[in-house]
Length: 397
View (cartoon, one colour):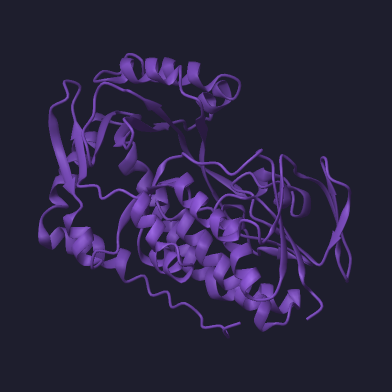
C-alpha cells in the first residue's frame, strides 16, 4: 500500500477518531490543530446508538462511564422556578438496555486523544493555509510548520472547515442556517444546582438550560431564534455582551446566569447550521464529521456520526489499499443516505428547542410531559433506536 501518509485537519472528535482507526490499519496519520492543546469542556452530549457502538469498538467505554453523567431527565421551569413540564430519562435507558450516558464533548475528545497520544504526529497551534494536489499527492502549506507533501488530506475541522473552504469553495455554498444561534459555557460555584437533572427555561425565541457538573461546576446551554443572523453578527466581537442583552431581563435566573458568564474562561458562541454537500471528496482530499455532514448540534449525535464516519473512512481506505477514488466513493455510499435522514430529523427539532410564540412554548411543555407516558415514549423512541444502520465489517489488522 503506497498511500500511507494522511494529514488530518482538526483534533476534536472526528480527527483523532480517524487517526485511531488509521493507525490500526497501517497508515501514518498527522493531525494539525489550531488550538494550542487538546480542548476539554464544551457542551453536554449523549452517547448511545451508533455513538455507543463506536466508542465500544474504540475501547472508550470504561473512561466514558467514569467521566460521564447519568442524568435523571429534564425539568422545564417558569419564570418563578416552578416546574411546569418534565421528561424523565428512564424510558430512554430502558429502551437502550442501559447503553446511554451523558458526557461533556470535551471529555469525549480527551478520551479519544488519549488513545492516540504518542502514536500519531500532532501539530498544535497551527493550521493549513494552502492545498495543492495532483495525481500522486497533496502539497500542504502550513501557517507555521514547513510545507510538506502527503498522500491524502482529510478535513475534520468542523462546521466552518478551512479544508472545505480551500478545496470545495466558500462556506455559504454548503452551510444552511437553521435561523438559530447557540452558546455554552461552564463556571464554578454557581449558587443554584439541581444534581443529575437538566433544568430548562424558555420564553418565545429564547431558551437556556443549566446542569450541574462535578467539582461544583455548572454548565449552561443557550439556544435562541436569530432568523436574520443579527445576534450572531453582533456577537462575533463580544458574545458576552450580545447574550447579556438578549437574556438579562428574560426572567427566572437569567440575570444571575449572564452575570456569571462574564467570568467564564471559555465561551462557545455560533450560529446553528447544517452542512449539505453532494460529495465529500475531491481528488485526494475528503471531509469528515461536521465539515462534511454537520446535522447541527441540536441533533445531539454529531460526535457519534463523526466517530462512525471515521471508522468507515479508515476501513474503506484499508479495503481499497489506499486508492482514494475507490475508498472515498465507498465511504459516501455507506453513509450519505443515512446521514441525510438524520439531518432532516434534526431540522425538525429546531422549533422544539426554541418556540417563537407563547402557544408554541405551551405546546412544547405539553409534548415534553406526554413523552413520559409509555405509548408516547415508545412512538418517540421507535425511530431513534431502530435507525437501521449496520456497521460494515473490515478485516482485522
